[in-house]
Image (tube, rainbow, N blue to C red; front, side, top):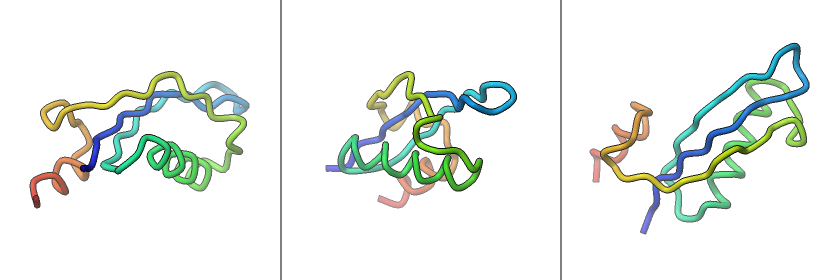
Length: 76
């Protein structure tokens, strides 16, 4: 059964820290972390060591803020 995982964190090492919140529809929490590191690293050109994860939580469908994740959930 798939889970909806929200990851909150910040990117350090740039001029000023950038705070982010990402949501993923995945099977395991570790999958969400891997996708987040990959996405943030490629979009912002930062290494994994410069990404600090502040919070990882499983959320319900009603709590989803990301429109893409929400749309994929509606398809099921």
